[in-house]
Image: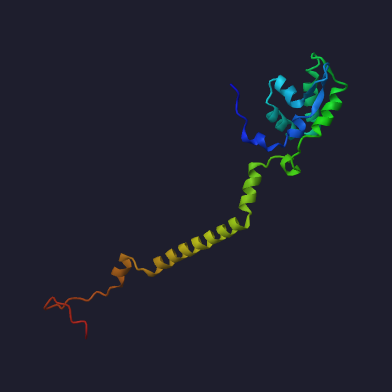
Length: 170
């Protein structure tokens, strides 16, 4: 059963590479890169993508080895390395930004913590916390406790004869 091609294969970015001729067999029939890779039981588009992501020297070495593996077939190949160099030059190259070292997690965290939006959020949160703590301290100082209420209430002695406190209006 034949596997369906992934949608990425339809873009055609590897067509120049995959359908280039490697050489001819003794009958004059051209052998393309796609047929070489298929004969090696490799997915041509996946292998092309892998080669495109390698440095040029590594891709050339790998493709040279693959071309040399077909030497048992009736092919006329002048120089497998020269053929590989020509074919690798047809591969699309990724922009230099994609080839740099992957970022470390701590670099990502540092970048996130130093972004203007994050700094503003941290400052606003700090101001909010200071205001909340300050308001709690202010309220606790101005609200008398039960002991303070009892201590501040004047004790009026009862009248010795009647036992009733004197009227407070006098």
